Length: 250
Image: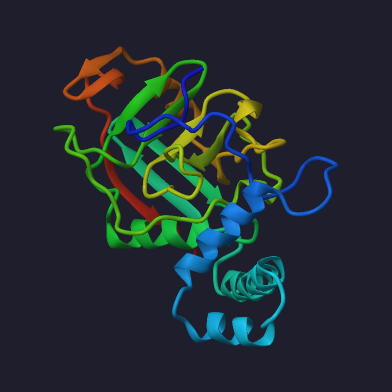
């Protein structure tokens, strides 16, 4: 099956995930790679300077581990401010789809996604990649196939225990596991191979379709082909997201 990518680059074969799923002992190369990324993102901050001072004379592993623990605590505090199960209504030219997001399991992803929804980012974009028996992808192109991206990327949260099963929504990304931006996809079947595994990152699942899966299946059945710079799988008749919004209940 094709990879879930925003039509940019293919994943790096054999890229190891930062989370350990095997029985090896000690930090892996992937763990160092992930923590170095975190270190660079926090470079120059007071947190980094304090950690380096406290761990002077110790190796990089201890410093990185300390930083990771602090950041994990920060993420946990951030998760408390995110709704546990917000509902999202996607109004498309083929019908409506309602999502329930997992704010506790994927707080960074859900916070980012809700920000895009509330800003109207997705309104007017299309489902630009539809592969029957696989997934339907949206959130990155206009009907004229002009790329639209957000400025921020999201750390990979694929190790949250939620599998890429039929009806789940997940973030698309490039070969960089932390490159998820705005594009998302809805799994049309159980795609367990997209879950994290030994020596690989997965694709972050952050919600479910709770209404309108029949609309998703209708989207999956449309005629597709190459269009513009996109090599394949683009619906011939654009499927437009007319509006995406949070659902409120009185």
